[in-house]
Length: 359
Image 1 (cartoon, rainbow, N blue to C red):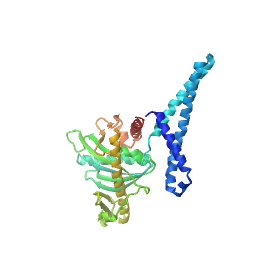
Image 2: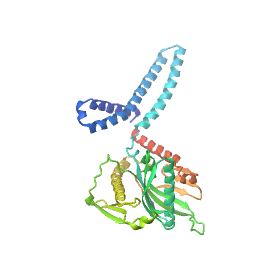
Image 3: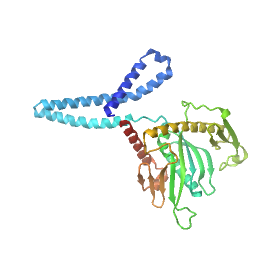
Image 4: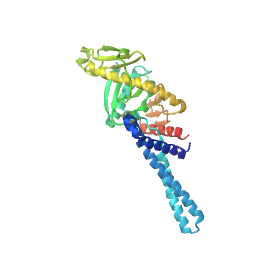
C-alpha cells in the first residue's frame, strides 16, 4: 500500500468519526463519545498533513503544466525554483507523515515493574544482576523517575538472586520495555585466580503497570495468601514480624511476593498490584505473539528467553544483538548512560513498524 492510499484510509476514517460524533444519540453514551473524541484528535493532525500533501502535489502538477505550455524563460525558471522548494517540503512532510502513521503503544506512558533474576553463572550471575540493577537505578535518577523496591533476594557473595522493583515517572514503560530479555556478561570474576574470562547471565522482565482503566478481575477465592518474615537488610523490624506477603494465583500458577513495606497490609496491596500486572502482561504476551507471527520484528519486547545483550568487560564492549549495535563505552553505560542505546533501539523498532504498515 502506498502513502496516498494509507492517507486516504485515514481521511475516510476521520470523516466517519465526524459523522458519528454529530449524531445527537452519541451523547447518551459518554464512554463511546470519549473514545471517538480521542481517536478524532489523534487523526486530525494526519488529516491536516494530508491536505498539505495534496496541495503540494497539485501545485507541482500545475507548475509542470505551466513549464510545458509557457515559452517565457523567466516564467519557467520561477516554476522550476518553486518546484525545488515544494519537493523539499514534500520529502520532509512525507517522512513526518510516515512516523505519525506508526500506531502508538498505549502502554508506553505507563509506569512499570522490573524483575531481574540471576541466571547461569552462580555467584557471578548474582553479582551481574546487581550491576544491572545499579545501571537502571542510575538511569532512573537521570530521568527523574521514582524507584521503589518490592521484593529482594540477596546473594551471599554480593548482588541479587532476584530483585523486583517498580519505576514511576514520565514514559517509563516506553523507554524500558526493550530491556526485557537475557543479558550476558563476559568478565574475569574476582574469585578467578587464573584470570580466565567467565560468561554469566541475568534475565530482565519489564511489565507495564496495570492502571484502573484495565479490567483484570481478581477473585480472592482463587488466591492463596502466605505470610513470612522478610529477608535481607531492613533492621530489627525485618526479623520480628511476619509482614512479607506471598500471593499465589492458583488458576494460573502465578506467584508474587512483596516484603519491603513495614506493614502486612501495605505489602499485600503492593503484591495485589504486582499480581494484576503479571496477569495483564500474560494476556498481552499472547497478543504480542500473534502480532509477531505477522510481523517479524528484530526488536522484541516479549520474548524474555532471547539473548539481547552482551557486556564484555575485557574489551569494554557493549553489544545489542537485536540491532547489531556495538559500543566501546561499557563503563559509561553501566553508570546509567543509556539514552543513546534506548534511542537507537526505539528508532529501529519504529522503522520496523513503519515497513510493516507500508508493505
